[in-house]
Image (cartoon, rainbow, N blue to C red):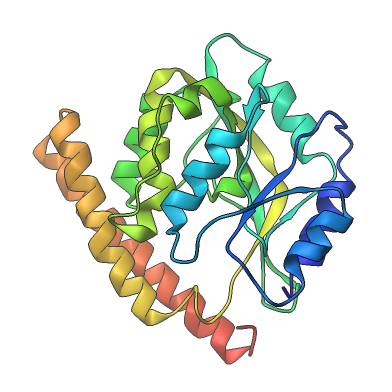
Amino acid sequence: MPHLEALVASLSQQDYSNLEIIATVTPTHDGSEEVLEAAGIRVVVTPPGTTAAENWTRATELATGEFTKLICQDDLLYPHAISAQVADLVSSPNVVMAIAQRDILDSKGKVIFTGRGLSALHGSHLPGSRVLRETYLRGGNIFGEPLAVLFSTQALKASMPWRDDNPLMLDLNTYTKVAPLGNVALRHESIGAFRVSASSWSTTIAGAQLVQTRDWQREYEHSYHTSKSDRMKALIGRHVQTNTRRAAYAYLAARKSL
């Protein structure tokens, strides 16, 4: 709560009907479980103190379908999201994940940015290693948040567990393991919306993200050959991303959108 009901409504409006929906939640006293159960969603309660990575790993382990999407309680999916990305995943051999653009909402649900994501990526399919390299060079997560990603369940489970030793790279750490297993399908349209708030976007978060992005880039350098020129581009890229984030925060704060 308070955005959970909007998410549940967006799930019920999907035009792809063959869905298994599982909610992994820590115990609450705000009516969340009741809202989920009333919508026919299976609720799995996890112990208090469960980390985000442990929660996402548990959700992944419970999934039984051929494809898996993780979505947080304050995000939204548009009605065509699942059907479009399932089509993307089966459109070409060896596709292990489908990624798409998404819109950005403020805390009140107003769209403030549209068509975000997939920076510098063109076409409908790319090798996962190529998408990872672009992410490294640009110093930002161009895959997008989990709401914008649909995984092959087999590939996702082979890459478990989710890691949150650097929490702001939680999603990217798993993309790093899944993407090299095959190809990535690209959809250059928004299939959902990610909500921002003062707690998720701030100058403090931007600074922490700069440090954790640097750590992720160094891990990438240990696994892949990078030239001196590559490393300079990566350094510039992460600082550009950080400054862009700070500018966006200042703009949203001035508009009282956080």
